[in-house]
Image: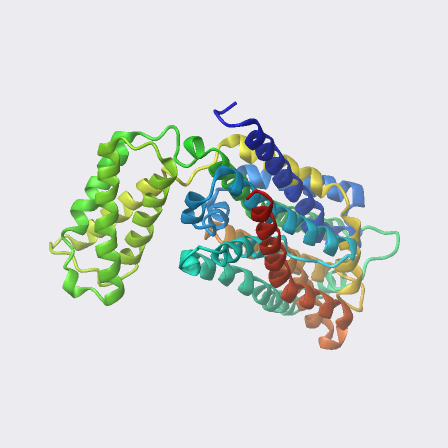
Length: 469
């Protein structure tokens, strides 16, 4: 099947199952944050809450793009995939998945909200570092995509800070603007057996739905990126380049980009721009030479296209990009358009992958959610979660995660919502309203997730290389 050996096919099936299982765990590990507020404010019964959240996660994945997933996929250097066999590449992906699954299950077992995004990215970086230090690998550290790592970590680091600050601001805004009667109801802790007033209940259910949808939209894309990584490693002849790409249109885009970059005044560029321009000219000629030779290596072509895109973006990011004609803005826009078209040949994901990840995340939400819900609902703040706190934290998390998805940045729904609840608690009772043992455990997990997942995946990667020598 697919023109591959039986052993590779079995490993491919195992890797796809592991990716499905990772997203399944992600569902009950991360989405528990979304349902904690509606459960603890008596807005929905637990069973109804997790079914509702699961359905919204499912829809979020289907409605989302693939920008976040591609951010994950591009953390693995194409050179690394090129230099390894299909067997080694699949073992590499399994090292990533097993590491992420083990850490997620461990933190779930102890009821500690932990980021699946941090875990996954740490595991990916771990195999990259593991490869860099293999005997005989020269300049391995140079293969790491540092600009992509920087952009990914900017989202991961900033989202919890934004969640904490915005929740405080929103709580203060509600306190100032709400009418006295409404304010009294909003800041009241739920009664043991009574559900909240209908208008408050509607707000809380809506914010829970928004967080669930945003989580599916962002975290679901990471699962899509994982599956695409597996397929590119195992079946590069099918998935390294879009099968439905029009070769003549791709040729036209490359040729157009080449004409434009030849109008650029090299000497007027800074040193970084000059290097990018020289490399881009080389990349474009390599593409044309590859095309003429009728080459069959789709991975090599993928790498070439990624290089063209990267160096084009470096040039386009220079606001003083010097072009030798008067139609500077038109040429800049045309170059950006051609770069986008060229990149589209490798930035894709089949619909069946979206459906697979949607099902995994949706069903996972309905299983095993209670451990994390108890921590979020009872152990972050000393006082019972009131209606205003629940709505503020959910609204802030939904907005932050939704914006991150729009910019193609992976963020942690767990950390964003947990920090939002902490911010809401601080706004309503000061720092003394926090349970510092829980905050300490969450913070320590946040700190240790990356290094532990990196070491674990690097160790499994080295072990796999030893076993298949």
